[in-house]
Amino acid sequence: MKIIDGKETAKQIKKEIAAEVADLIDNKGKDPHLAAILVGEDPASQTYVRNKEKSCSEVGILSSVYRYPSDITEKELLEAIEYINNDDEIDGLIVQLPLPDHISEKRVIESINPAKDVDGFHPMNVGKMMLGLPTYLPATPYGIIQLLERYDIETEGKNCVVLGRSHIVGSPVSVLLSRKANPGNCTVTLCHSRTKNLKKIAKSADILIVAMGQPKFVTHEMVKKGAVVIDVGIHRVPSDETKSGYKLVGDVDFEKVAGVASYITPVPGGVGPMTIVSLLQNTLKAARKEVYS
Ligand code: NDP
Image (cartoon, rainbow, N blue to C red; front, side, top):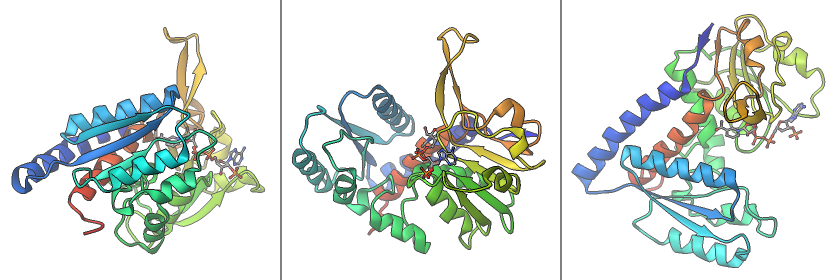
């Protein structure tokens, strides 16, 4: 069994991005710039945004965070987005989700200029992804694709089972792996909470991608010997093994499944670090005007 080391892969890709950013600054006089909008005080969202800022500074991408109180109105937020849409100095814009209940995430996402939508959530960019056109791929699926690529994992003709159909992970990764591309060319089955015989279907997978939000749901009985297992889930659970009193686990029971898988991503240190890297890559693409000229 081999561990797919997302942390190390992300470190390597960050070095490559840093070189490309330096080249863009030196030869084109263009400083890539990512803006993030953060609404409210949700601790997880604050951590995500802080990590994004830190990663930007590691590779030389400028970052700005626009913070608003949780009682900002939808109209005010849409105006803030419009302002950033029109700021030529800013290449990429992300709005940290979730938003307070009184704000429509759909309206917010649709108001972002697709050329700056480096999360790849705007319907225009989702449509481009479906058609296989150049676009900003959503960060987590893009990170998964890059792990498969960098670990030389054959995908052509393989049975891939995706557990979970969210708009940000399960659905897009199922689209990317069924495309006529490399990685791609898999036969994909997408499972969700209404799927019958989910365990049996999971066991038919050569490549099993799990994005359910259910701690340690996948056990060794659900995994074919030699399968590649990608665990997207991330959960903080109480633990007496650590000083902090908690540890992170995925949607896969790592200890049990590691015994049957050929490759497996750990949690933490698997898919997570790749998600941020993908966002940096999309920001670089935006600064180079690779998707929208
Ligand atoms: P969502 O909650 O949006 O979606 C979960 C999906 O899993 C849904 O499609 C749901 O089905 C399905 N599901 C849930 N429970 C079951 C069950 N018992 N049997 C079958 N299907 C089930 O989750 P996300 O995709 O946003 O996130 C998934 C996990 O990945 C979370 O732990 C999240 O924290 C993590 N995550 C990690 C990231 C990273 O960078 N590492 C990035 C994004 C997410 P239905 O549609 O029918 O409700």
